Length: 255
Length: 292
Image (cartoon, rainbow over all chains, first blue to last red; front, side):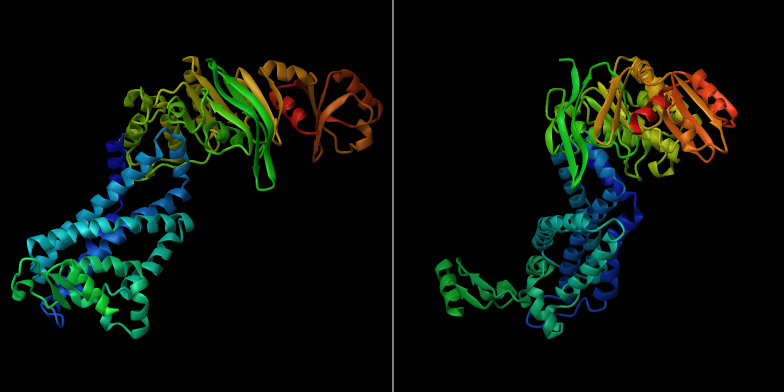
């Protein structure tokens, strides 16, 4: 039952070009317009290129986008068409219904990354360690799950007609304010103050951290247990120590 | 166990509106029941309670001896709702298959599609169906699980005469298989043609529950219709008539003594034209029961 339901949910979304094409292509479009031009520029104080930073940003953006749209809009539209009423009258267990939608959304999100990553590699010349690609991918996929809740909330609170508008009104500006399009440091001070409170910013940090951009506000501390030479790290951490006690001291000292 | 579904003293309030007031009814296996009532009578609410789509404000709804939200109970039930929707971007065959997968022992896909007369459209997307075809799809979805009980809430609303006629035949076919059918409708011919038991609901209360013939017999025997341009209220005073309706100058009433009534009207000097006297049917019974 779960397999069949998931397949049906997937087809439902895949066959709507407004959703499937946008989810897969929009991040590439953004990347092409914004990322490629400056892709090889290195961000101040780090070894990270703008291309890599923007790849992380767009991964976060597109995956959260899939979650919010596939849950938000489809929920709102189905409520408008009273599809949910009929589904509730069937013997389909609610848990199966929910799971099938989550799986579908994650599959779509993974597809989005599968399109975006090669594009960044080829067109943006982004070079990361294999481990970094992988870390970026799984963090972004896992981290998008809370955005399912946001999607549901929007879907239930807005009607079918307003859901798209609500999402666009909230989502894109928030993405900008969260430093997804331009590093936070480049945004006006007022917005910078708000950024840390935005969920996309926190989500973004997962991505940026994976590509090694400590520049984005993460103070980093390197626990150098096996005495590796500092050059190996590729970036200069705020503090260095040899075990977690040192880390504790470091944190205390910063208070 | 022979009881398929029950409402036990069920009350349902929507805010301050009491849609059902302490209604009790039993649907036995094999019943073919029509719930008849004007709009807002409480028919859809009753079905919603029996299906577990809503919970009663007080009282109980029972489906196959279980709570209606129980998946095992639901797996023996097929539903066609008045307000319904299906995903637009799936094909007919895909969505029938999807619904079939919810049930333990479904009909073969082709049979379900054939029962709805949608063989030609099996590979079309749902959004390409016409209104009547979509209703038939909902019917296919209701029967595809081979349920023991079929709930149909106003299934022929929006259909043309031909569509309604063939739809009623399909439902009758299903009932002949020995299945239980619970149908709500405000089309009296449907109830008359299909049901072996009619439950009349009005304003949240059951006012009659009997076979169609018995309900008809409760109501005065003959329907008299005529046109009388100069008829006034007092012209009908004291006559053994009921369910009088006067629209423009058309008068319709029920009476057990049509000859006496007509003789009296002539004596009072009422001019009448286009006189019709016929046997009261379910429609008359219904109007008589629900207008007070």
